[in-house]
Length: 284
Image (cartoon, rainbow, N blue to C red):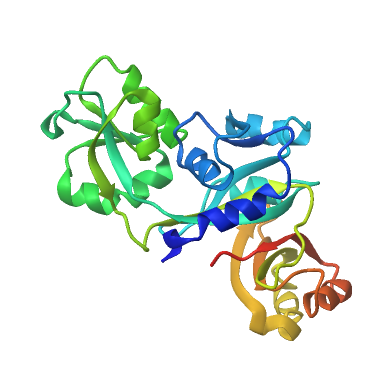
C-alpha cells in the first residue's frame, strides 16, 4: 500500500540536504500539504503561504524548497500542476504519495444531525463525494482554498452547523473535534506531492525522471515516436494545455531512471526538445 511508505528512511534521505531558509507549503496550517511536509521534514522551518505567495517566496529565495500537490487518484492532476510547469529555475527533488482518509471536523458539542454545510478544498470535495452522496446527501458543499482554510472557517464560525473535511492534525491546530474519521480512506484515494528545489538529487538506483514536451498537435506523433528508445521506461503521460494556442499542448512524461545515467542521459542529449523537470528517488 502506498501509505506504508518507509517514511523514516525517506525523511532521513531528504534531510541530508540541509534546510536553510525553510520549506514552504500551501497554508494555512492544518492542510494536507502541511501534513505531507511534517511527514517528510518534521516540524522544522515549515512556512505556510497562499499559492501566489508560495511561488513568489521560492523565486525570491525566501525558502529553499516547497511542497505542492500535483496529482490525485480521484481527480487526476491538481490545479497547481500547470503553475509548477510554468516555473523556471526549479527542479523536482522528491515525490511523496500519501493515502488519504478525511475527518469530518466540527466544533465541540456539534452532532451529525446539526451539520448543514461541509466546507473543503474542491479536490477534497470530489474525493469525499461518494461518501457524502450516500451518508449526507442533503448537506451543502462549500469550497475552500485549502483543508487548513476549511478548518479555520469552522473554528471561526459562530454556529454549529458547519463542518470541514480535513486532516486529523487540523483538529488539533484549530481546536476542533473529529466527528467521523477515515472517510473515503483507501488505495483509491491517494494524493502525490512534488517537493520543488534547486539541486537535483544524486541517483539512488531506484529513481524517476519527469520531462516536459511542449509541441503542436501536428508534431505530437513525432514527439511520441522519439520516445521509442526509452518507451519501456515510460510510466505516465499527462496532457496539459499550452495556454498559447488551441492546437498545441504540453505533455508531462514520467520515466524510470535518472537523467545522469543511461539510457536517459543519452536520450536527453539527443532530444533537447524534452525539458528536464527533475530526477528524484522513486517512491512507488
